[in-house]
Length: 539
Image (cartoon, rainbow, N blue to C red; front, side):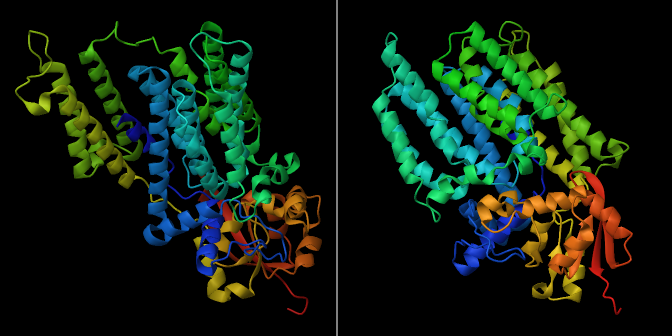
C-alpha cells in the first residue's frame, strides 16, 4: 500500500509522444492494416516500421473507451505492477527480508514514478524485462525449466509492443550464461546454473522474435534507428550528468552497488547485469529507468542479513514515524495547493486532515502500562487496521489534492487545431510543425512536416530522405527558412517559441501573414504559438 501511495505521484497528463502512438493505433484498428509506408505525415512513400504497433492498438482502445484519464490510469496501474514485481524480486533474492525489500522499492519508486511512468511503450517493455529477470533468477536458484519456457512467449509480446528494445531480452540473458560458463570452469560448492536450458531459451527468444509484421526489420530496428548526430540533441538521449536530479540518483545507486560488490561476495551474474545496465544509464538519461528497475535489486541480496530499525525502534516507534511522515506529506500538499491556509480547503479535505491528526494522537497517547499501545478490545485501534486506515486516508488525501490542482491540459495545441479546422478541411492543409507539436496535429488528421519520431525521418529508415537532418539545419539557421518553406509549398506554418530561430525570423517577415496566436504550457513552462500562411505576390 505504501508503494501504491508513492506511485500515485505519476505525471497525470498525456505525454507528447502519446498522440502519434494513438494515431498509429487508430489507423491499425480502422483499416486493419499494419503499414509499411508512412501514412500520417505530408511526405509520400517513406518506408515505415511501426515498431510499437501493439502498444498503439492497446492505447487507442483504452483512449477510445475511457478517454485520456483512462489511459493515464492504465499507466499508473502498470507502474504499480512494476513496483510490486520489483518488491517481490527484492524479497526473493534477500531470502524474505521484507524491511530491505520495501526500503528499496520505496527508494526507487519516487524517481521511477515521477519521471518514467508515462503513457509510452517503455512501461510495458520494462515490465516484460523485469519479469524476465525474475524468471531467470528463479531458474538460477531452483533449476525449474518451466520458468524458461515462458520467455519465448514474452518475446512474442515484446517484439510487437516495443521492437526498438527487443535485443535487451537476449542481452539480459548474457550475465546468467556468463556465470554458468564460469561455474563450468570453476565449480562452486552446491551451486551451479545449467547452461543448456539457458542457451535453448535464448534461441527460443530469438526465433519467437520473428513473429511480428516486419520480421527481421523489427528485430534490428534499434540498429537502424539510432544516430548520435540526431538523437544527441534530444534531452532524454543525452548522457547523465550530476547537474541533473536523475543523474544524481544514478550516481548514488551506482556508488551503493560498487560498495556492495566490494564488501560482499555477490553472484557473478549480478556484477555483469548491474554494471552493464549502469553503462547504459550513463549513456542516456532515458536508460536510467532500466538501470533502476533491472539492476538495483542486488542491493537487496547484499543486505539480506541486515534488519534496519530493529535495534533502534520498536513497532510503536516505527508506526509513529510512518504516520508522522504521512502527516508531513499531507501538510505539504495542503500548503502547496491551498495557496493561503487550510481554512480555504473544501470540507472533505478538512475532514481528511482532521482524521490525520486524530490518528497521530491515537498513536501517541492511547497506550497501556503493560506495553500495548492500543486497547485490543477496540478493533479500529489495533495495529494493522489502524495502519491500513492511515494509508487509505493518505490515498484519499491525494485524491482531494488532485481535484484542488489546476486543470490538466492534455491538449495544449487544441486552440490551433480548432482554428485550422474551422477555416479549412484537414485534407487541404499542408502544415509545417516542429518536432514536439506535430503528433497532435496528425492525430486530428492534418498532414504535417515532422513529429516526435526521429527514426522515421532518418534516411537509414525511410530510405527516401534525411528529413530530420534538414529540420535540425533549419532550427540552427544553417538552412534559409524562406527557401525551405517555399520548397515544400506549405499552406500553413505552426511555429512556437520552442522553435527559436525560425520563430523570430518568421514573426518579422512581411511575406508571411500571422493568422492566429495563443499561449500554451509545455513541460511546466509557458510558450507562445503562432499560425502563419505565405502571402501571395498578388495579395
